[in-house]
Image (cartoon, rainbow, N blue to C red):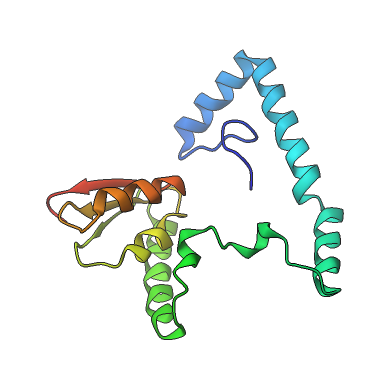
Length: 158
């Protein structure tokens, strides 16, 4: 919804937070530009009055806003059947719990794991996914997952 480094800044740990804050204090013009760009996007796309207007339009028979359809999201586009969704949710919840407890979790992904699992886990910001190098299309899957902000490595020993 927002573009990182242009409309907001993200950080993975306390050290990166402090470094980002110091850099912004040293460059007030950049700090102001990021704040202004984020505020403009928020007001144009995410402010409560915009959300209410979108909802009322949809309830009134209009199209659901593209922002909420998620059709361009690779995690959704595959259209999983309900029978395959439950195991994916269980896997995600187990990894999410580890992500909650461990500051920098690393999860190995076997060569025969479905690519969808990689995309499912891509939104856990501190997680590193270690894909088996022999995974079919592993480099392409890693590149796509990185578009979601995932940390992905190809590894020989998973």
